Structure formats: structure tokens, C-alpha cells
Amino acid sequence: MIGLHEALQIVLDSARLLGTEPVELREALGRILAQDITADMDMPPFDKATVDGYACRRADLGRRLTVIETIPAGTTPVGTVGPGQCAKVMTGAAVPPGADCVVMIEQTEAAGEHAIRFTGEDTLDHVSCRATDVKAGQIILRKGSRMGSAHVAVLASFGHVRPLVARRPKVAVIASGDELVPPAAHPGPSQIRNSNGPQLVAQLAALGVPAHDCGIVKDTAAAIDDVLKTALAEHDVVIVSGGVSVGDFDLVPEVLRRNHVNLRFEKIAVKPGKPTVFGLTERAYCFGLPGNPVSTFVVFELLVKPFLYRLMGHDYAPTHVRMRLEEPLTRPDTDRQSWIPVKLTGAETVQQVEYHGSAHIPALCEAEGLIAMNVGVAELARGAPVQVRLL
Image (cartoon, rainbow, N blue to C red; front, side, top):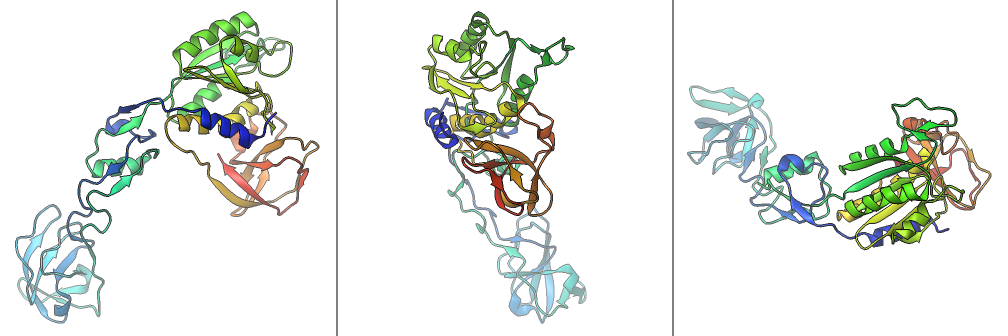
């Protein structure tokens, strides 16, 4: 049995990039950049007015100013502002040569035909100078960045309409267990509905990774072998839930070995999630996750998600916030690192949600994060500082 840190390092070190592909801009959301992106122009590309007003020389603010032109956004100034002159400009319009500030319309009054007077005491420049934000040739997005909506806007702003991104892994999801029936079926005696399959598919979808749900496989070596052979041949990653513990019908590790999967570990010192398996072949990777749904969810968050991102060239870093416990936490066993679902109760406090163990999947619907109790720690006192890994 190995610790979480060692297990995570093993899976991350095993990951190899799967290749790249260009995508249309509308398909870039959630993808991982496979190249640095540079600016093809300055931003702003010209001295830009940040308010509706009059572009003038600061030295002339006490004088009557003649309006020489009106400059809407998207048009090029015709003239140069000289002494005693100004140009009416709209927000986002180019500031004409000669002007060094823009006074707001609200701080002016008419001073005859085609003339105004500044009525304020002073003014900000209200000019965003050329290349203030970005210079042409500057790297604006780094290789390995995960594209959010703001990143897509940046790509569009600089003309990168077919960015090169990492290929997404093809992932197969298999649920193992004689007790499982499809979600649409009514369970018979000693049966339960398969929630791990839909849960894993949903967790993958949240990463932008499409999954092939292989459904339920019975707890026989032949049935597992049949599904696993096809999954390993057709996918980059195979995730099996259930059948990985030490019971008589926990056959997944042995079937993985028969299929030439080099198992790198079979147990981790994590609760929930101890019977977690990871291995690889020459072309594919395989995770064996515990059958209890909270275990499956937690191990996916701790190990599988960072691994999938690494396959795409992205170093995933979960968001942590430092909070304090509103109520104390205790546990009887301290030989493994426990991950406990919590909810925020204030600006700085958290407490454990009602949680009955690794089969209690409804608890995660209330959880906003997870906190760890490390090996050897039996109690966390009320008010103790904790790192909350946000979900």
C-alpha cells in the first residue's frame, strides 16, 4: 500500500502526450493548448478613448475649444488637434494626433457654434495608449493552458481561429458487479442500480473528455476479460469500477495482468479508495476503482483527473482555500489519509456534511469540497485550520 502522493506521482510520470489537432474556435472551450499563442498586433492597436468626450490638449483646458471633427468608434481621425482645438470622440474611438487627454462630455458646456468649454477643475487622461495591454509578438497564452471563455475571447482578438490543441483521450468506462442493474431497471433482491458508470461519464464530461460507457460486466473472469480486451484495444484509458478488492469475486487485477497490463500499484493509503489499481500496456492505461460510489468519485478527483489532464499536457492544480472547522472531527482509524466531504458554513468556516461512509453518494450533492485527515491524525478540533479542496 502506497500513499496518495506516491500514487499520484506514478500516474503522472506514466502519462504521455497523445498528439495534437487543430480545432475551430467554437470548439476550443475546455481544450488544452498545444502551442504558445502570440499577438499579431498591439492591443490597443491605437490610442483609444475610454469615455465619450472631447480629445484635447491638457494645456488648453482653461480655454474655449473649437471642435474640428467628430470621431465615432471604428473611424480614423482626419485632423490633428492644435492649440485651442478639440475633437469629439466616442468610447473606443481613436484619439487624434495632438491630443493628450479626453474630457468627459459631462464636464463640458457649449461655448458657441462648434465650440465647447471645460467646466471641471481637472480630468484624468481617459486614454488607453497603444500597446498598453499587449505588444505585437508577445506570448499571450501559454502551451498547456486550459481554454476557458476568456481564453477563447483572446484567441478571437488576435486572429487565432484554428488553435492547435492536445488530442483528448478516448476513455472507456466499465462497471463490474453481479449486483448491478441499469439505472432504468427496478432492482431485485440484493441488487442495486449502477451509478458508477453514469457518475464517471459525467465526471469525464466535466473535463471535456467524451467517454464510451461499456455498461455492466458480470463478476466472472471470462466476462471481464471479454469487455476489457476490446476496451484496451480501442481506447487510450480504461476505467473499471468494482472488482478490485480482495473478495472471491474481485477479479479485475488478475484479468488485467492476463491482458499484459503492468500494474504499478494495487492499494493506496486513502479512505475512501484503498483498493485502487493503476497499470498500463504499451498503448493504453487502466484504472481499477473501488465499487462504492463515493470512493469512485473521490479517487477520480484525486488521481484520474490530474492524470487525464497530464495526458493532454496540462498540469492540473486543484483550488484550495484555507478555512476553519465549525465543528470538531474525529475518527477511529488513522492508518490511512481520510478525505471528508464538507460544506461552507460562512466566509471562513466549514463543516462535514452528513456522511455515512463510502456508499453514501447523496452526501456529495451537498459537499462543496473535501478536507484531508492525514495518517496518524485522529481528531481535528473545532476552529482548527484546514485546507479545503474545492469540488
